[in-house]
Picture 1: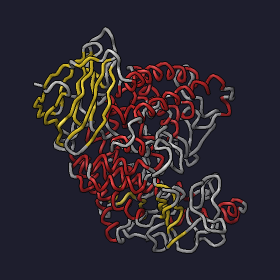
Picture 2: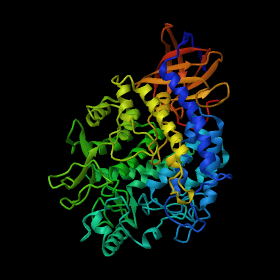
Picture 3: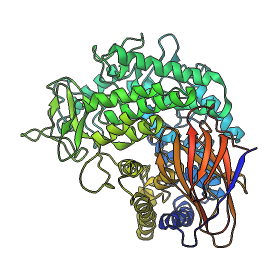
Picture 4: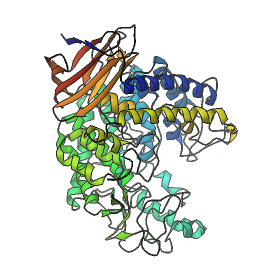
Amino acid sequence: MAVSLEARESAQTPPKWALLQRKLFAAIEDAAPQALARYTHPDGCLLWPPSPDFQSIDALDDCYESFHNWPLFYLLGGSDRFLTNAQREFDIINEQMSQHGTGHGYPMVVREYQPGYDWFHQGEGNYLFYMLCMADPTNGTNIERARRFAGLFLGEDPEAPNYDPEHRIIRCARNGSKGPAYWAFEEGPHWPYEGYNLPFYDVPGCTNHEVVRGSPELAERLGLAMRDRMGRGDAVVNLLATTLGANAYLLTADGKYRDWVIEYTEAWMERADANGGIVPDNVGLSGVVGEHTNGKWYGSSYGWAWPHGWHSVGQAVGVAAQNCALLTRRLEYMDFPRSQIDVLISRGIERDDQLYVPHKYDDPGLVNYAPGEWMWYPIRKEDGTALQQDGWFEFMPMYPSDIAHLWCMSMVRSDSRRFEQTRKRSGDPFAVNSWHHTKDQGGHDWGWMAYLHGEFPEYPEQILEHNLAQVQARLDFMAQDEQDPATYGDAYFQQRNPVTCEGLVQLTMGAPLPHYNGGLLVARLRHFDAQRRRPGLPPDVAALVSELSDDRAKLTVVNVSPTERREVLIQAGGMGEHEFTEVEVAGASQRVPVSGKTFALALPPRTQARLVLGMKRFVHEPSLAPPW
């Protein structure tokens, strides 16, 4: 029987953060239906593509991304309609986009999945599906989909022979429900993409973006090199596919999915060990690193030399390691991203109270370009070109989510030191100091971690006020929006989506937002409405995680209602992977043994409970199953 507690501390004047948190819930509840009604057709279809004849291999992910955080908001405590609408839109997008072609003889959606694209974008698009599964793990249709989607990479689908178990590789950098997408590289090679730098710098004459853009001959030459080097064999970004396996395991407890996640991730870990500790970004069809890249360990799609560099490599490595650690309860898997972060830190350059770390690698001495509108941060040489040292280039601040995820998994002092090494040590601690925008409207991990390390007590109120301003900005944009829908791009709804969840996830669950390119929501705590038997905080209830360590968490829960009693069920871990040992109630001299995954907390009107939660982490099999 679950332990039950009752809050007895008065909160006649609720703390400001609690009122702001409930105000944010209300603001999103008001704004989101307005966006949905205005920016979709009456039947729910998106207003993009504008023509029934449209076809493209790109942009499917952006359709799914439009609603990526709607089920997340539901599982935080948003109303049922957020789950209903998100599921409806997912189903509609599958059907709507199956009516449009890729230009390669297949529709944009084949058997409810991307037929063949890179995992940087597949991971972004799958965020919505993963959150749908977490929000409602009893949905039989989604469970069947989760099995089928994971089966695309377990050799279970004869139409999609993506995985080679002998060499432990995914056979192509682009892949999906039609199998290895060699065809995506064989037709119409071209470069550059607008706003992107080059994928490598050793192709004769192709020295920088502007030169290639101005020469059709050079663009074709570079495109052919991409085809030859990237069109066959595995790419490190494919590690993001492990979340399909992890998601299927969390829904079904079928060990074959866990086994594949471990097998595939460990293959890349072994390649990193054999490459002097640096994960290579490619491996050929015969299992040899550099087989199709002239013997180089770098040069794949979304690899070390690619325009995204560490952003794509780091997400892939971090997501795969987190999946393995979660499914096996073995935190040593986090050494994989930790080792790669250390590779960058060890080569960092101090500048302006900030460590600038290299984000890319290519042939030493070849990189010679002036940063443009697509890249603002890189340290430059005296002639204005980007600095390259021993092959490493584009020295920039490290994006904070990588270390935030690492520290939240490990809870070790050495990862706190990595946070201290890489954050900006002066100026506004709330500032987002990163080279790329955040589609999830996040990026404040440095400020959040500073708060949890006792250095930024204003953070809870500041992030909630910021999130409220984000919602209002989207409403203001809608009020002034006169753009002709016929001119919308694929990301039009993302740019108008008023749902923002960073502060709610950090403050209520003690977690960073999921890795945007296909990670799971791995959290210290999760809340359920005990009276309505559904995920999320009950109405009127606010929660604040103010301290985290390996064996405890501090949590304050407030009922701001002057009339209604609320009951919340608190779970140890987003997937029940942790255990509460005891609960200490501040101000009551009460220490209650728990020895379980959940406890219940009743909150009479205008009361609060300040709790110190004793915990054992990663001691239970993770599962998305509800706690009742």
